[in-house]
Length: 196
Picture 1 (tube, rainbow, N blue to C red):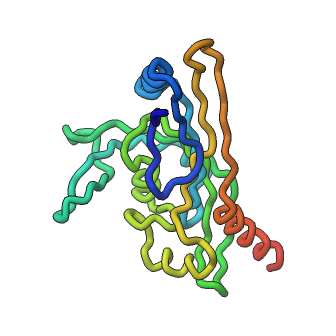
Picture 2: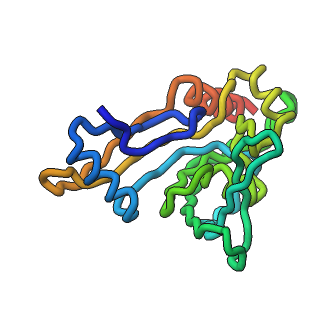
């Protein structure tokens, strides 16, 4: 068994594994040629503007002094920047819960057209709406408060994956529901919204 693609350690959801070498190379070609469809669910801080549907911002890798790899948004004229495109759709808005010290949040469906390292995390953070629980690019003070409200990890989930079967060419769509911890956090926020 071999991994066809990777997810960040903190990301839950669908991970494709190939049983045969021939299937692995065929599927990896699809990922490289952008023939797959990958959609994630991400809960971000703030109210995402409904009219912001495309993020077409180049990304550039760099190293911190301790050698840790990071990524940042850059400009089109940056020779080391890699074109990166994410499509964003609002799935659900969660209101601020001032009594709990929590801001408004938005659950987004993010479809990536390119597969850059930390692409979704950096695109959303550089748009002013970091993913809740993100320890690299997020709001560190809020992340600490979220732990007390049951969210102990980054809210990024590989939700849907589309690809062509290596042998038949048939289009397949897989889906993975949110893990309980993430679904419970969104459900709790909705229940509190209905009570107020």
